[in-house]
Image (cartoon, rainbow, N blue to C red; front, side, top):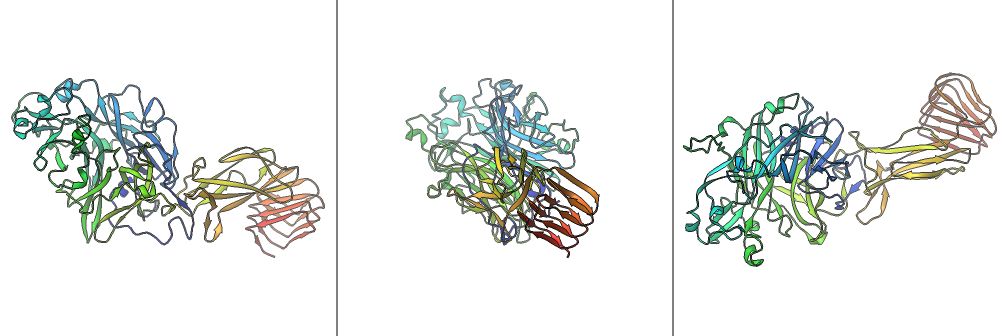
Amino acid sequence: MRAGLVSLLAVLLLAAPLAAPASAAGPRSNATFYNDAKNPAADPFVLWDERSGSYYAYSTEGADPGYHFAIYRSPDLATWERLPGGALSAQGQWGHDWFWAPEVYHNAKTGKYFLFYAARMNKNVAENFTFGDFEEPCKLGVAVADSPAGPFHNIQAGPLDYFPYDPDYHDVNRIMDSTQKKPPATHAEGQTAPRGTYIPMIDPNVFFDNGRIYLYFSRNAYRNWVWDEDLGKYVEESNIYAVRLDSAWWKDPRGKTMPRIAPGYVNANKRGDHGARRRDGYTPILNYGSDKQSWENAHVDDYAKTNGEKKDRRWEEGSTTVKRIVHGKPVYYLTYSANNYESPSYGVGYATAPSPLGPWRKSAVNPILSQNPSIGMYSTGHGSIIGSPDGKQEYYVHHARPSDTADRALYTDRMRLDPDGQLSIEARTGDTPLPSGSGPLRIEADRAIATSGKGLSWRVRSAPGATFPLGNPQNRVRAESFGPDPVRLDETAADGARVSTTGGVGGLRLSYQRRHAAGDYYTVRQNGKPLNTSVPVAACTQRISGTHPGPLTVRHGITCVENARIAGPVHVAPGASLVVVDSTVLGPVTANRAGALWLTGSRVLGPVHAKAAGWTHTENNRILG
């Protein structure tokens, strides 16, 4: 396993500030990426999958018809490909719409992947929220899979067995008109409303800490009218709460156990009501009134501004919790989004606490991520925190928009924690070095010697071994013919082509290129050298592999030697051709007026003489003579 990033759990529990290394994508690499807003996404959560060496991003938007939650895969947090389908089938679900904010957690011991998500139900509404006409009955679901690519299946045919209840809330919705947009004009009038309401939940986030598991969620803004003393009116708000979970579900090797809330929360808010209906508790984490920040007030006057079409609202949603060590002490960080996701004022703030349940205090530098028209990034928010492939850097993967009218898309931005414990996010749409540990990259072909008239495929791998999606225009492999016998490419694709020559030996150079934000492509260089590989293309008349007795005389045609050991000298007669790749020759190699001599990645115990050969290509050999 890689140092500093053992699993998703390790990412969440990284215990020290992270510093950027001297080079981000491998030794002296020039490989970059940029936020191109090409992948439709909302509320993205990113999982590092140790087994595949890949990142998986799960999104509210972007799935194919018939599925919920798009899945994107990347080797480097920057070059994404969307997987077909989605995480969860739309058939047979307990929720009927509003499938939002997926997050996936992997238990390396059991191999199970757990998907937490929010959805709105249209069945059993009264059983969960008292009233059958409850407007926004959102609950949380949990599904499981054996692969980060799914398919995920609900552990049970219903939402999480959790009934958070606010016994002190005067449910002003019950004294409002049917539009539910104009609340009581005075606090005194609102206090006449009946007490108590069940809480709709969205935006789940699971946090593991010292053997304990916490579920954070947002109290959906709908129906949560809060009196604002400063404004002298009611504002509908979303707040962030938390609850402890048990661990049986996490440890179940079959993945058939549904998470349950810790016993101390069950019926914690019942308060003398001896009826059968559950009224569970929760721990308040974040709200506006207990820690006021003016940047969260972008929509508190929307009712008047829109002539009654919109409500006066505030949002605190989309939380992610991590732990760090600052000045030798553990500090808990919670990022969250405020304001409407379509608004220019949508942004990200953070709060800190000495324990997972608080008390939490918002940072004075909020927001740490907000729209920046000068770089073409609008409406930034609701992301997740993840480490680079080697764990030496951190990133905030979030959604934003390339214009104030465009749909949401996937963005990756660097997050930093300074020595004094202050978080910052560097919003960029220009060229940025690939995340640390992505490289050194390597380029490969599926065969060392390509057969003329046959297909040849190629790939580029990250340092952990994941392949780059060459269909993503942020990168490509450029295939160039060289040598006197041109190589023709037909039936070309991003990752291969059918190759052919006129009958001799041709060379195909495969170079890995990335695209600048300006649109031009450049060849990636590592340690000052271009990242490429050369493949011979030949119509082989004889193939040799394994151990072969010597001496070997190539009298005519094209002899192709691959992964072989030739026990003696090799001689190529006039007009014949020899291609040797990844082999050992126990003697000299002599080509006298040969058609072609190709020698790469091999060891030769003797000199190599190519007298008046039509074409000679040697590369990365060890010649001992």
